[in-house]
Length: 165
Image (cartoon, rainbow, N blue to C red; front, side):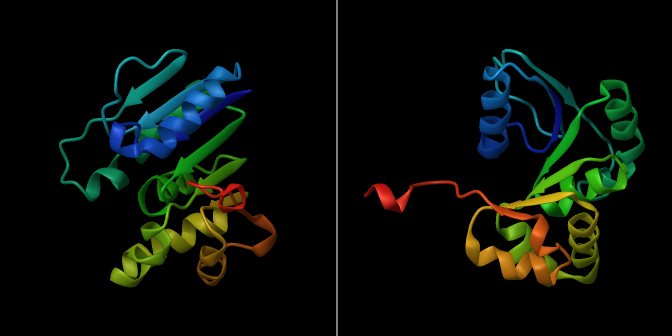
């Protein structure tokens, strides 16, 4: 399978880094589009580092045409965006299907309450996604209120499995 991830591929974006490495180890063709610089080395993962001279928040909007061209050239089987507020919004604007978005927490629990624009970005991404992955059950009600259909939500916890303790 050819998978295109959108998200923070730097060391601080450890969740996406783990997803990309795991799928690459399973033999899938992995492409990552990111505004952040990846840590070396990333074996069997093609990274497209997006740079922009536009101020921080506007770079997400102004880079959509460039990212759309990259995704078209990759021609992936699936697009999977990590962090709803920015990369999820960008992926939703691509009109690519199937599109998965992973919410990490503050992107759906805090950011939509900060201002109307972030709220609209999150709602747009969650309603356009074919699947929404959340880290814990307590996020389900929030993402549903923000537009994700309950039948599209999957809980994939990160961290410790409490049943093993």
